Length: 349
Image (cartoon, rainbow, N blue to C red; front, side, top):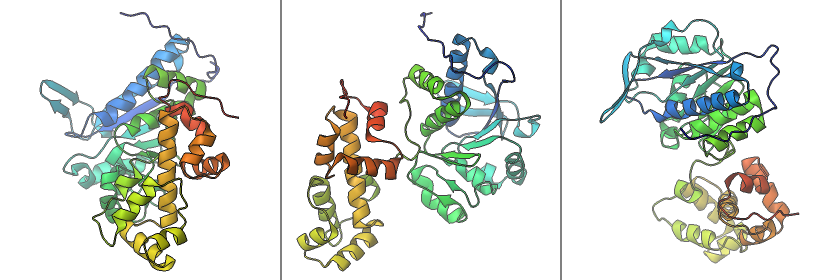
């Protein structure tokens, strides 16, 4: 076995009073495996770093329970089974984590299971869903009046079923009080890293992320997918031409009056048509496109912030910083440090 050079983390809770945290993962037959295997790997990596730091007493206690005993995953020679039913959970649970719903929504129609979810939501420190596991929490009323997210392709169905939930389709994960929801399967790993950071601090979470060769931290409200993909519609009234012009000319004057004049429309009619067809106001769309382009430059180049700002249509680096703070709750410099693939990163003043 290779010898790993793993540095100890010293900024951990003192031994007096510290205790292990119990994590219970609830699985469903026939659902995908990554929703629970990804977070499990994060928590297990945390165990490894705790051991190397001389603090195995803090490692997570992880249990797997299921809504239906037997195989919970099968794929050409690989079979994963769970033998403990959810209703046998006893004692104190720190974090209760739900994977996605099963393909036929059987767990959502199981009144006993949904009642158990509602009851447990008041007995745990944290309750978490991965991907469409948010449907389970919503069905149990846990998300009523709360902010939440789910996989982008299930958002419309979610809205129809659960109008009392404040659904946010863009973030990769959302925290509202002690309730955490995440988007697709891999975002569950980002959320798990965030939970580790809550428990053991930023330095420790950074080590765990490095061990898994993951991004240090994706902002929780980073968009699930491209704004151009999200707003792509069949061409109507020249909308695609307008979209193309905006994306190709982000450094230009893209005020509503200028765009309306270019496409021979009044500002009022331009705004009305654009918003009706794309579901987003022109100004907001321009900002999203500029922000996405800026993210690409920060990830793929080592150009200074002043150059990135100019290329993306921001008059000054301050404009770029404000846009990042408003939309991603992170600075451009911090974003670059988390996501840059450039070989060198200049330190901007």
